[in-house]
Image (cartoon, rainbow, N blue to C red; front, side, top):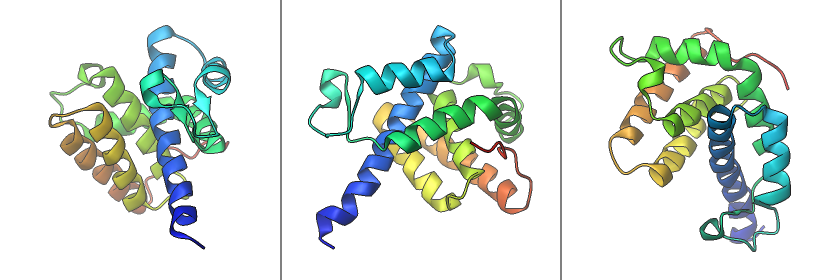
Length: 164
């Protein structure tokens, strides 16, 4: 297998996670349900051919299955995910105090921790996503919160067991 073949799936999965964060943000901000937003993204923003660019408002080369799974999974398990995130936050930081994009990112990461994805992979992927959206300390917060949620998950305290 060539080097490009081994890198392509990882890139498409990372891009799917970026798109999922954007879609979850849209769900929250516009009050739209997951299926509506997934359909909108699939028709208008996701480009599985990889020829479009983020600069054009498109999401090139995304893993459509992973994108849909994350968006559906987060919305189905959002109450449990939000409870877990709130428990991981300092008491002086209510969930509503977080930037809406950061909230969407943490929800997506928390959801994936509850799936069959190694915790370290989830943390690394969502750190990459956070660096794409934020230039401040948000990445450190993502690292700390997802690490805390990962430790709880590994200790058997599952919070996103909703199956897709």
